[in-house]
Image (cartoon, rainbow, N blue to C red; front, top):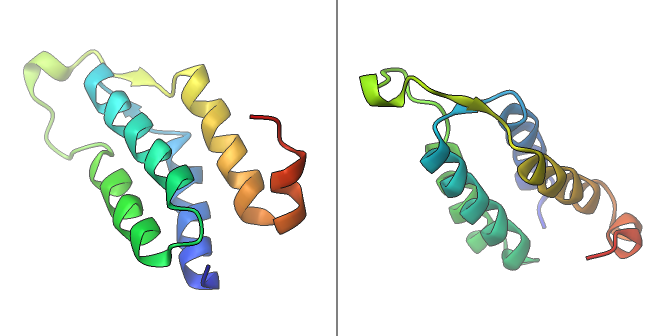
Length: 98
């Protein structure tokens, strides 16, 4: 994977950890995390899913029914941490249990 794509992913994953979103938006984040993990070394697929993750983020205008926003759920935090370890070094991915 290209270094700039990896760096963009690491930056975005760090941002996700401080997002506050409605529950349905967290499900979109989970789907994007699944896609990032599945993309593997396919840089184009990884970029596309990274874009989807960015779109799942907080909106500037919040609908009245979305006022109950939540911090990152623990399972999502764990998935992000696993992805970060995988992206930071080739040997570290083998150390993480599934």
